[in-house]
Structures are given as C-alpha cells and as structure tokens.
Length: 193
Figure 1 (cartoon, rainbow, N blue to C red):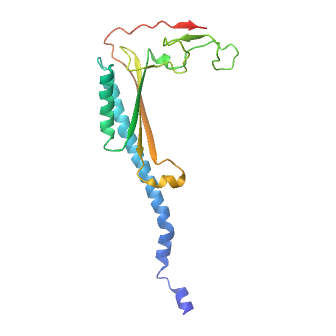
Figure 2: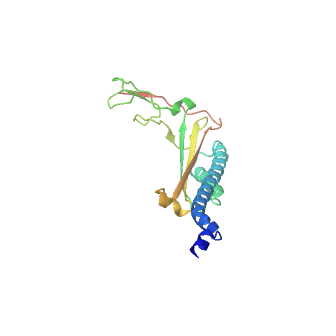
C-alpha cells in the first residue's frame, strides 16, 4: 500500500499550484499596481500640461482662476484615483536663467552660502534663496513652474507586508512662459551684505 501511494501522481499538480500560486499572485498584484501608477501618472501629466497652457493666458493670475485650473486637473484625475488628496504649487521667475540659486560671494570657498556672505536678492524678499521663485502665476512674460502632487491609496493593501506605504504619491510639473499680454514687471536686484 505504501509503495502504491508513493507512485501515485494524481495530487502532484495541487502541490505545485500551492507552491507557485502565492508567487504568481504577488507578481500579478505588483504588475497591476505598477500599471495603475503609470496610468495615473499619464493622466496627471496630460491634465497638468493642458491646465498649465491655460494658465499662461491673460487673466489667469488671480487666485480664483488658479483654483479653477487646479480643480480642472483634479477632475480629470479623480476617475482614476477617486480617494486622492492633492497639493498644487506655482512659482514664477523673470526668465529661465532665474531658476537657479541667487548669486552670492563665496568668501570661504566652500560652495555654499554662509551667514554674513553678500548676495544678490533677485526676488526682492530680503533673504537669500536657493530657489528664488515667487509664489503665484506671475505676470506677463514670466516663467511659471506649475506642480501638482497627488496621493492616493494603492490598489492592493499588501504593500504594508513589505514595509511600504499604503499610499502612492505621484507628481507632475510644467514650466511655461506666460503670454506677452503686457510689459513684464521690472524687478531691480539688490545687493545685500
């Protein structure tokens, strides 16, 4: 009887399935989660780029116009990620060169600004800034960097078993120049020591 049971192969596939099924299911869930993230990222990027183009037109520098543009982006992403939370940010610069840190005199040659070193205040806030952008849409001919960050729950809650967050965060940015509907406001950089 024992010899006959040892030669019997009728239950072998169920054992193989029991060994492979968890691995296959985890692989499929990971793939679905990755595809879901990629799809949400594509929707967010497309919606943000369309909204950023609208934002460069005259009259869209107001808070209510910016809120309406933000809401248009979120309305396009919400069907894909219904339980999302979001943050939007707009920074504007006078030109594309103004995106780097404000220039300073590196007296001790350590490649970073230390207290007491003189600098050129390009955004007129009286402080040295590593990012001299000013909050808001800006005015005519200004460069606006529009960023939206979205957080939504993952498709499968199993990421907690691996120590990952149960939420997924994606973001998209667009840098566009506002339309020349007026003369660009002139800012005079000030040297501060």
